[in-house]
Image (cartoon, rainbow, N blue to C red):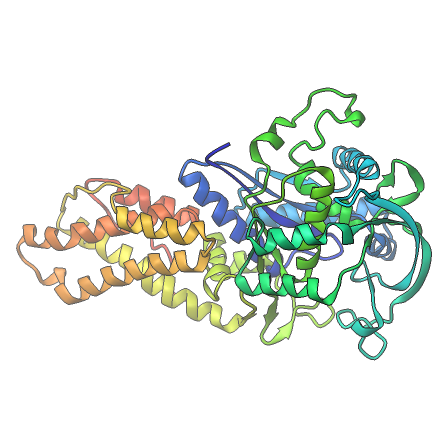
Length: 488
């Protein structure tokens, strides 16, 4: 289907409460979803929670709850944060939902019956012996350990030996590598593509798709002693949410919502942080190739956040709840502060003390002050303006170019440059000193037009504020409204 846009965030692990790292990815996805709706694309925006695995089970027991009670509570917390941040997702998927679990089982059945490009079985039984980090939900090699411990979780991994089913990744690697090299599957930004291609040179092994020792997960349909490994379960959400597999046996073989899959797959953009790059750029394409399903068009990987120079961590109190920012600044300001501080895709250090400074500079003294000055001058002399939303084709063209390349921060910069130029014109021409009303109107009308044009595009970033400005500047007699951003 033409003019469609399917965007996904990773599904967030319920072992962690929502923080600004999760919010950053989700607000970025929301901006792109809103942009594509603005240009009249049919949009499907997916987010959700990843709720299976040993780590979740252990956390639930520690909290004195059943795994389902625990996951229900944390999933509701994520949904509350997204509602608070005015996220416009079309669906919120949970991997503990029955429909998802049934479709995952059907995916495993398909994988069990499938052959690799070399004619081998995609899945095979084997014994895995290795060092397993519960925090990472993956096996580690001796080379990856630092002083015998997982470098991320600072805990010694467990030695595990158990029967697993394995996915024959090695048979798919040449195809996947070629797709990435040719940009059939775009890995963005460019340094992440180089990072993924570097993994092929290091050597990649087949990977386990089931666990024998895990009790909290989806049963394999062909071996109930095994649970689906969390990564296969989790990655499948991007297609199960669209009704894949269609005509699922688990739903009685009835035609279901698989029309959504036909409409929206392949994904146009999958957003994520760098820690899950390997799983999305290599394992996920292999699973899709084995199923005979198209690969996503693009994956965009952003860097990690630190807070005041330190890694985000609950144990040292270095986590910012987005709701705390909303209480202090409002929803739109929180969205703006998250997206405007750094280049989208790069690693970033969130400096809390800079939030007030950025708020005052860009919003209170910038956009808010310009709107107040122009509307006040127009109302004071009862000047009628003849302006129309969307009249700046050049601005829209530049904005389209950067947003279609997912350059979210550059889109903001483009709009603020336009506002800055308008401010410079006002300062240079001093319309408050002009006595002749026609002359004054000649200065103010094009600036009012610029504000209206910028507000139209700002709807994707700060929708509530943009709606207020559009309403205010769509009147012939513009009046000074409430102060948009009081100074801190």
